Structures are given as structure tokens and as C-alpha cells.
Image (cartoon, rainbow, N blue to C red):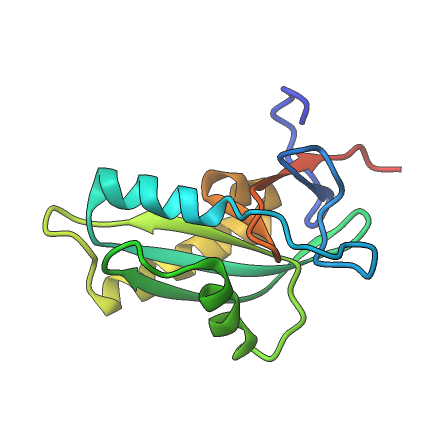
Length: 156
């Protein structure tokens, strides 16, 4: 990503895993799923915060476009859930997704109330409409649970 403060056009971004590979889910060439980064992130976040609410945004990733598909919020009580269980939850969205970003939020007492989570989720959706790079403010993972980030691309 450049250090310019110009706002990219909506969707003018691409995603890369932390290893620098183009994002995307499992392919036929991949026989064994890699260890996921999600479990490490959840354990670290839970150790720092205790129980928390996470705003969640599922996205589709194209060659030069990242498109939000669905959003929700989850409350994490403990850190025992694994990536396969999380991915299974998202299968209920009935949308083909390539990435997901988690935005932990909490108040002094831990997880936030549902009404507050819904309000914060709407604010996040508005910010994402303006700038897809907001996904990097959360913990952003591909469909295998590998950490990734959005990079700005120059318009053609």
C-alpha cells in the first residue's frame, strides 16, 4: 500500500495473504490445508481482552476488487473455537466468500450488547463502502484462516 492519503475507488484494492500470495480459498493444487492464523489471533485477543464481541464482514475477492457480501457480529466466550467451526458458521450465509475480517469491540464489562453491536456494525459498513482498506483495521483472513491484508492498487 502506498503512503498516499488518497482514497481508492470503491473496490480498488486487492488482497494478499501474509506470505504475499494472492488471496483465495483452497484450490485443487492444495492437498493439505496450512495451519491457520485465526487460532493464534483468537488466543492472543482472548488473552488480552477476555470475552469480547467481534464485528464480522465476509468479502468476495476478485483480481482487483474486494466486495463486501455480508456482515454480522459474534460474541467470543473463550478461545476454544477453531477455524473449521468458524468457516462452518459462515456457510450459513449461503454466499461464496473468499475472506473475512473480525473487528473486536468491547466495553468495560466485556462483550457489548446486541443493539450496540448492530449500531457499530452499520458504522463499519458505511466506512467500508467508502474505503475497502478499513478491512485491514480488523483481523483479516482468507477462507483457510490465513492472515492477509488489502493493498491499494493504482487505477488504470
